[in-house]
Image (cartoon, rainbow, N blue to C red; front, side):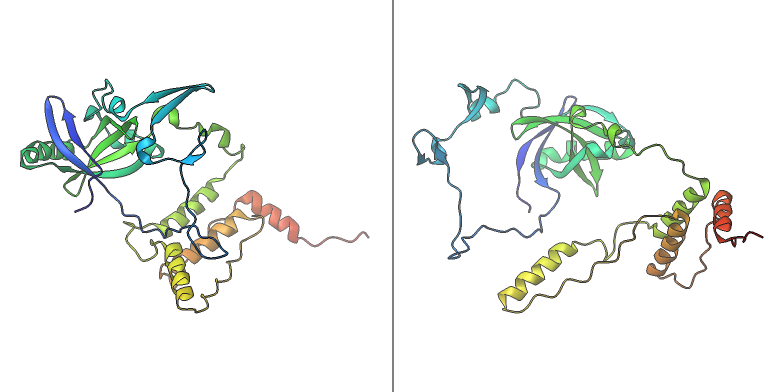
Length: 292
């Protein structure tokens, strides 16, 4: 059973569902410690009081908000736990919306909600089945880790998922990142769509969707532990220089994608070259006339 990271309740109108929260993902990344290069001993950080210049224990440490350079407002854990918020001890459902009405850039980590005890089983199942039939997600708020959170409740494999969501004012406006005004031809769009078709699939299940960086790092660690030379890094793939012919690049990409997907023998139709571009190509190939 995964470790519970938060316990509380889901508030759905007058219905209260006791739940506990577990992480929906596992961390498989490789974690390093810091060591002294001279003798290999661990390097650790210690909490030191600036005024007394001595290390302090955790029991001596409290929270505070720096109001100004000379004034700190202390805040205790009890005061944080008793904030006058309806979301302090519950996941409060405020609305139900279509999932496609939420920009994915606002979504964060996901957590599984499990019913806390037999008494929670029926209201949990009620919300689960109602959400599944409604084709909507629940928008909820709750207090966690020192701040009020926004998120959605959705259904996954007969379990409720609580997905963190950023507040609207936390999302940056991407307008300044938009590309400069350029014209894209219909032939170029058709070429891009043809490439997308060759790369399309029904799901993300496959050997290529794995963390090859962590695998390579684990192999290096194992080799060094056994006093072996780590495998040499492969030569980086040659990157094309300045893109001069977009249509040619799209056609080449379509052919390569079909070959990589095991469709190398399939017939590959080149995208039609725009007439304007064809005239330019013909003009470049025309022999220069010598003066009489």
